[in-house]
Length: 338
Image 1: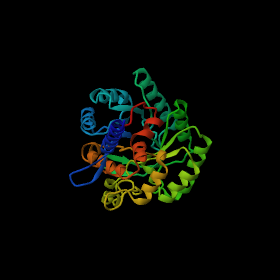
Image 2 (image 1 turned 30 degrees about the horizontal axis):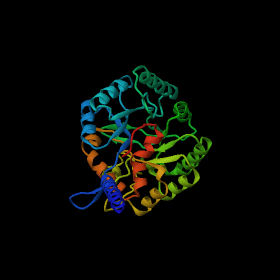
Image 3 (image 1 turned 90 degrees about the horizontal axis):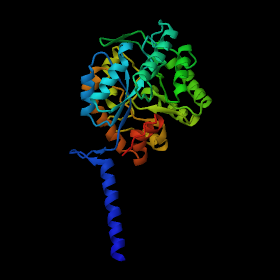
Image 4 (image 1 turned 45 degrees about the horizontal axis):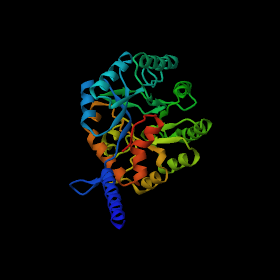
């Protein structure tokens, strides 16, 4: 009997030890890295990178599943997705784009843009694509003056006609509403947007709202959202050390200047954000949001590494939820988070 009990204890220890190793391991330089399942809850494919190149990068990185939205020509969207899905052997799921047909260009007809979203949905259905949601709805976006994107910018709010129409389309499918707001780049409107986020969250308590790029939110504003809503969550994309190191381009006024970083100068999660995540594990969702060719080819591995390191510093349950569990639940992916 004593030998049996001892054997059970030894088995339990082995299981615990192996589980610990599965989620955390030390690299050659002694850093602890989270090794659980990663879901990239939002990335994009633009016209400057081929299906083959994107597929290669997805296959060569250790992100288990990527939720993918298409940019570029409206009529090519579903065709491109199916090609990437085949080449990656199902490592992607489809997010129907909301920003083609000029949705995010203020001089374009809003009704035409809304019809474009509906047409993309019909394309997906007719192509028998099991889409899991819709890509980001651009509410605010700073101007771009870059060789890869010339863009005048847009500054709407959640009560704007085209935004309400797009949200209604997403509501009908009962999938998360992904919103792109820029609280720093449009600081003068940040209070209005924050109040509207609280309002829409409380008006629709059974819907999930996800804020791209942490909404460029300041820490006290994040606490305000978490305190006053139960269903408005943060997507972590473009809040990593790489984005913070991109100051030169930002100072030149070629893109957004309001990015935030959740990391300190040693590339570790700042303690205040770490505490907030551990206190609110269901409110954060991991994503990379690759868009341009250099995102996919140059910085992908580095960004995944930053986040694996960051996740390892969180409580085990928090890390698993942010890395995989929350996206799995909110998008109804039905995968096993390990």
